[in-house]
Image (cartoon, rainbow, N blue to C red; front, side, top):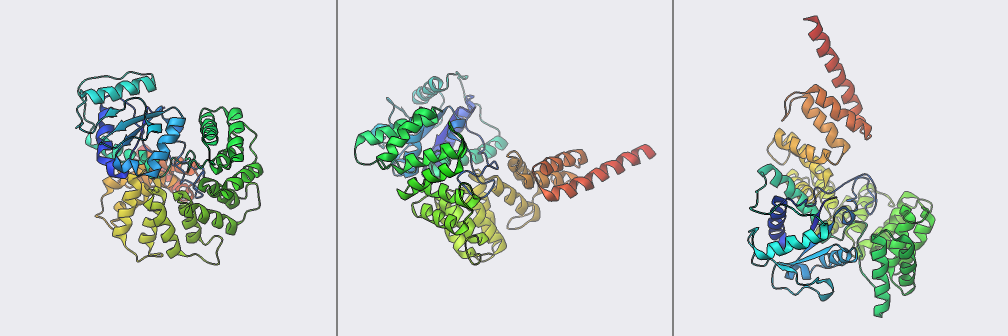
Amino acid sequence: MPDILISYAREDEAAATRLRDALAGQGWDVWGDASNDDRATEGSHPGMAIGDALNAVKCVIVLWSDAAIGSKAVRLGARVARLAGKLVPVRIDAADIPSELRDGRPANLSEWAGDVVHPEFRKLTQALELRTHRRVRSGEWIAPSPRLRRLRARALAAVALVAAGVVIGYGVARLDAAPGGGAHRVLEQGLKEFFDGKYVEAQADLRDALQAGNGAAAYYLARMYRDGLGVRSDSARALAWAEQGAARGNALAQNMVGLLEDSGRGTARDDKAALASYLAAADEGLAWGAFNAGWFYESGRGLAQPDAAKAFEYYRRAADDGNAAAGNAIGDLYRTGRGVPQDPNRAVQWYRWAADRGSAAASLSLGYMYANGRGVAADDAIAVELYRHAARQNLPGALNNLGYMYEYARGVPLDLDRAAAYYRRAVERGDKPALANLGRVLDKIKAKAAASKGR
């Protein structure tokens, strides 16, 4: 389990980078590349979900600044981290940390320039040691290598997923408790129990919060039944709970209704209804709702025909909230000239933006652009690095492309055995082109062995 996740406003990326490198140099395991597995949770398109980031770390550092105070996503992410007992607030300017999200006297790094013996930095590391129950080496900071810096820069952007739009699957969206502090406290207690895996207790408190009119409670009840958390998995009951949250205007619940209608879980598959649910979630400001709506417009699902221009509009709304999957989709539209003028240069810009925010699909796309010299000067070495980044997240297309690069010695030495290994991994993950490629390279290996025997 990684030690630390860093949450920050986009304007504070430089401060976050400095802190991440200093902590990593001291031996802390700072959150690495975001997971883009094949489980469609809050994104309907397979491979676009980021994963359960909050559960994957021991603590969440929130960098507080004027920009962070003004960021709804940062505040909500901090609230979720506090409910999970993982919040470590850090001040990086003179902004006042919200009282409910303050923990004792937070470390003040407003005048910190990266010195690991600075008393406020040491104060932070002591707090981290208490949170993580481990000690790390002290002393001078060992700077990471240039290559590690590049890889961690992408990881840091992924770390911003708390700031870019509440952690997928754990976003509170809005703690819209009915008037009265009691209802709000019941919801917070239910969420804390949910994150702690105490699902029996969580269900009781979330039901009480829902009765008080809180749509967020319905969303978490729906998650319990959809994912079988403490109860038998039941898509129909998950849909019923999600519909109650959607009726109360909760964006995560509206999006979940769309996901269930989209996949035909708990109800007959209904593309038109799913699109309407995604649009409702998008209108409530949920980036994944906007992304899912964009995907439907692009593919024509729930419509008479595809509408790439409308897809671009919704992808852009999602990207404006930091959604990396949407950035990759916008890159695809510019690359192919659908809904926007064809522009390989802008496609590269969007792929890079999305890759820097943890999208394995965007790393694959950007690698393709470098391998083929589209929008950038051709560079097989960079293409290989990008393919490897995506392959570490087991993206089938990246595994297949790496196999191709080893088969034809592009950016790497010729290595048919390694090519076969990558092709085989891609085949195991359902990549159809990789099957033909595997057959071809195995024939080459046999021919080479036969030639060696004949000498």
